[in-house]
Amino acid sequence: ALVKLKKGETVEPIINIPVTIVTKDNVDKYRAMFQ
Image (cartoon, rainbow, N blue to C red; front, side, top):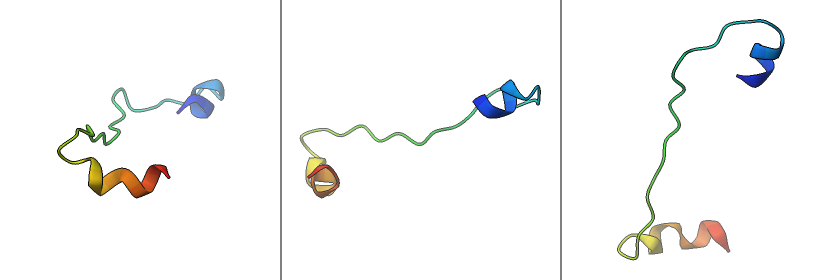
């Protein structure tokens, strides 16, 4: 989006980014990702 704006192009007003809250209850699913 930043590159498009610098070129004078338009971008969507909302950019959805998937987020997962990692808690002590679900940390085991994500632990390998951060090792």
